[in-house]
Image 1: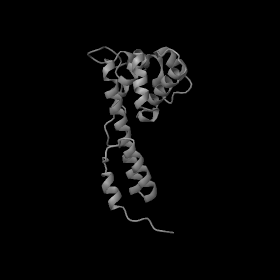
Image 2: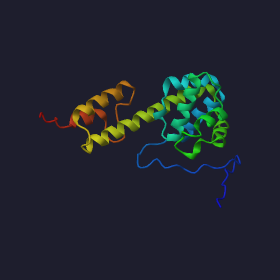
Image 3: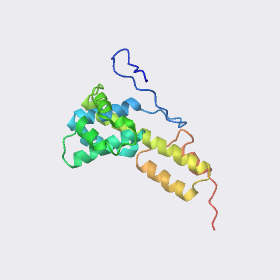
Image 4: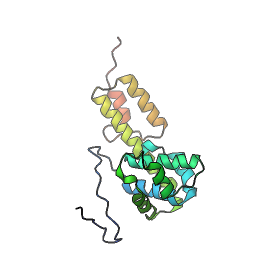
Length: 183
């Protein structure tokens, strides 16, 4: 039998810390939750978040699934609330975190509608940084060549990625890379 651990200040069930592997990057869990929670209770925040983010920008697959579901409901002009989202997610969510109780938990997080753009931009920046790190790791391991590295880095920079990765700056990576052999 599992004991329920509650947060001392709120009495709500505590969420266990979720590992983000060895990515070396901070995972903005509370920011992801705040964005989703505000989208569930403040309809005017939905278009702002949809303008900036996409489902793959979320670290957790379940958060990406929630975002995609909210996006679909918005596109279909269906009321967005924890119940409509949970109903759509019941068969498609990659984790157990997509139930109505978790969605209701998200709506209880302190969120200000005016912060949604700022929070979404933080999530986008984090997603781009993760992608930049993954690209540099793929190149350094030999999994991708110089041509793919150049096109991926150009795409990342065009989409607003910072000019450096937690592993190596993108400029250093391009300048230090050996020339790709001509076959």
